[in-house]
Length: 101
Image (tube, rainbow, N blue to C red):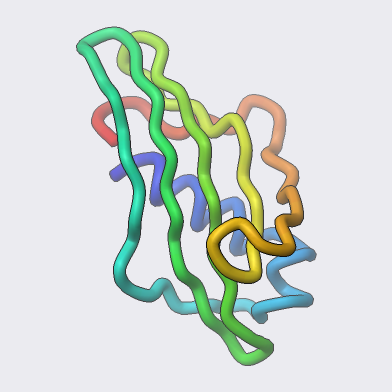
């Protein structure tokens, strides 16, 4: 799941995540979301629960697929299911990765 891997990698390097959750963090369960994908395009939204020494939050990921490559468009740290949403900067040129989500 390339989008999941890239989102957690970006979050691991985020000052916002370090301050509110703590780094390293653990990924919880269940990971929720939906995707709509064809062979050349797609859109995905994921909610990834994370927890660390400072608290629990949700990573909200919005990604699009163009050709074979997924790209993270938006990444947020939420208190719970959209509440208290804070954007996490996605580095320019950061791929969601090439291949399947």
